[in-house]
Image 1: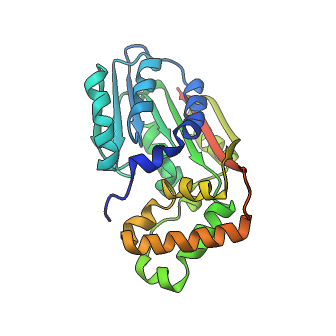
Image 2: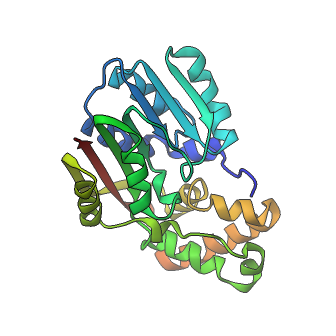
Length: 260
């Protein structure tokens, strides 16, 4: 599947997307002189902020999008101890890491019970795992996207889409249970609603286009994706109406743990 991530489109809502990053970062303890990994680092700007605020000697940003990493490269040149590499979270593993940080990335990987265990055992003793995943898959913005993908004119081109990100995400209580079973001595797992006041419902289309719809774009190709997008816009506006402004209630789960 081609790399369909578009940094410019994704960053159209940079201010809104950074709010959960700030909240997740505030849950973490600094690791002076330590090693940090940011899984799903995207364009790298927030990874650079994480590196500085944690006082790390070394921070590695990992992403599977070459387009995103091309944007991140400039931060590696500007910030000592910061580097980036191409990688897949579903296969990534390491050892002796002081903080593993994953902001809006783990939902692309199925099997969170297995995934969290692998990440936990990539940590040094006594160190931290922090993650944030969207939990808004029941919102019309996402339900409509799936409904349009199932329409015959698009379903044939999409074929087997693989694992549903919504199916991968667990409840806050289940994350708390998993973190405890993995040896967490301190932890937080919470659901938070981020209320984004957007100019209109059309803005929701542009938001989802830059994130949730990316795998659909990759499978359909540009011309067919534009047809998909128009159909999605039509159905979403029918569902939500022409609201100006539009209050987008975006649910996210934030989890943090320190292990023995």
